[in-house]
Length: 398
Image 1: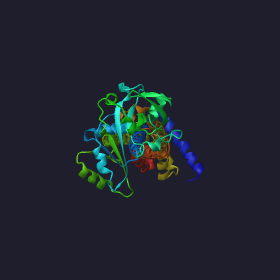
Image 2: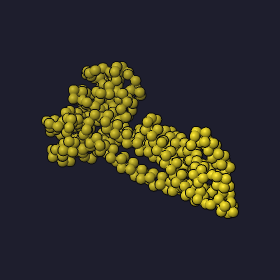
Image 3: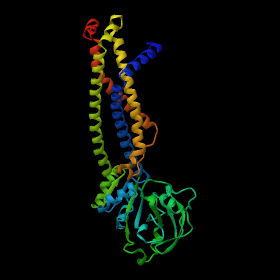
Image 4: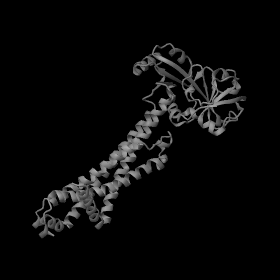
């Protein structure tokens, strides 16, 4: 078929669509809803999974150890930036430092949250760490941050920095401190941290620290050597301490992943039902269309039109309706994910976002293709039945 023939066919198809515009727009709306659901579901699933995986990667650790009762709290701190305090004995750290599979090991201790009235700084959490062994905080320091912390100097997370700015002095547990650097945005709980050296916190009085025991730590980060089997190392850690809470990079956010899986099952059922309804509507619409235009088709066949011409004409109409609905569905699906998805608790609590890019383009193509297939599939049998009707019979049956 030449390009001029294709243009003529499309022009004729659009004229036929406009003859029953409302009915065809209803079919396009059904395709639009199906495609928008599909685009939204795929982007929703991808954005949440990516945020969980990225948050785990940003910590730089393959294994995270926490008190057994605090695993859900630790995940909330990592994924949702919620301030938390939980503790375990520091002898656990001493028992692990000599394992051959470990490249680096680091700990953090989470003290009272700053909005609890412990100091003059609002919004954040004091995090005690050892800069000499750290591999979690250091990689995120901004370029203008001081390289090393001296006595009574602190770093602040991205959120705290935006709230405070780099002020010269502040009060922390009754002691003056100086903010000498901030962290870039990580999307984890350390964004709300104020980081102080372990040696500085050790100098504070028990009255200043309240209930905190200086022999306690909150969380251990483990970076493994290349080629280490994570499951085998986890088993070895279990032998050392059977009750310790262990999270691996792949298991962080397991509750969120399970919730996401349930949501996606609901989306799958909804999309399946929407597909069936779109197929039935396409079948119903084109059954009515072919019934109304039997005489027209009979005359076309009588003057020399082939079955393939009839099939192409009606399939072109179905395809144009599907493309119209599909394009509108892509726009609606992206509108939902980019502007309204923040109202979903699962997305808002972990800060997940969907960004335009190759993925959204690929998802758009997939959604459009499925929308077209559904519409063409529903229209196919009425069209084939009409094309197979004998010309004289088609004219008489009108």
